[in-house]
Length: 120
Image (cartoon, rainbow, N blue to C red):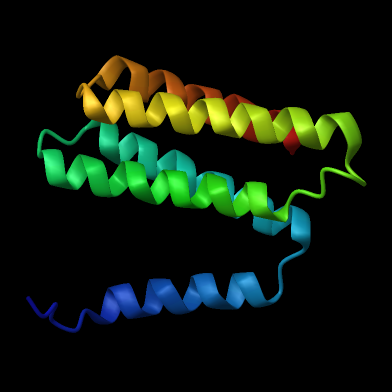
C-alpha cells in the first residue's frame, strides 16, 4: 500500500532531521530514549497484534542502537550496567508483546522515562 504524501508529516520529519544534524551526543541519546518511550506507549494502547508488535520492534531497535553506541570498555561499570538494563527491558518487552501484557508495557515505558531522567 502506497502512503499518500502528507505535507505536515514531511515538515515534521524535516524538523527531526535538522535537530539531529545539530544535536550533541547527549541530545541524540535523549531523542533516542524519547523514541523508545513513544514506541512502547504506542504498543501499550494497541489492540491490534501486528501494530503492537511493530511498535515493540521499533522500541527494541532503538534500545539496541543505544547499546551498540555504548563503549563498555571506556564507560566502565556504568556502561556495562546500562547495557544489561537495556537487555532486561528488551526481554520484558518481548514477553509483554507475546502475552499482550499491557500493564508490563506500561511499566517498561515508566522504566524508560525514569532512566531517561536519570541520564539527563
